[in-house]
Image (cartoon, rainbow, N blue to C red; front, side, top):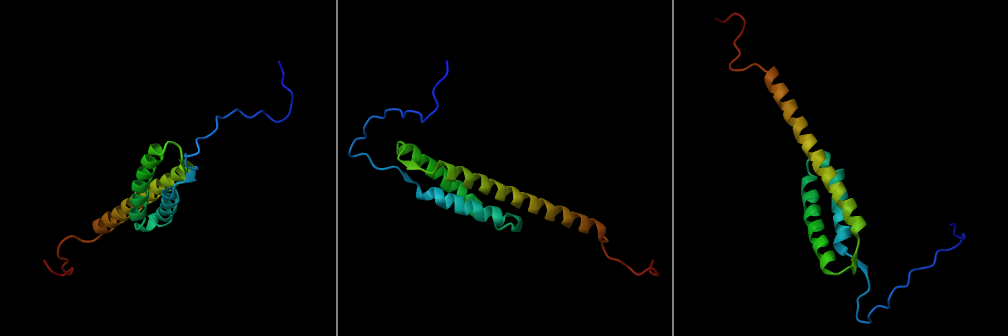
Length: 122
């Protein structure tokens, strides 16, 4: 069976109740994205941990509000992107901290331990 080419018919949707609110984008979704972006950009400088953590907390709140709104709050794509950026920022923070610890341990191992006397002292 083949179908004819052309626009697909739209599914019939029941009329909305007049008191239903219009779907709007959640304002927290934009904030989560902005904080996630800041967290990802400053993650290597260890300062990204604060905005990334705040972004993850706001994303959690925004998801709860969107669920409670019954579909009238949108912005799930912005939330996902913001969460991914926030997690990337936290990973960059972890990499930076581990790198600094390794560099510190290597330098500490290379330095002499205890008091260093001159070569002619017993």
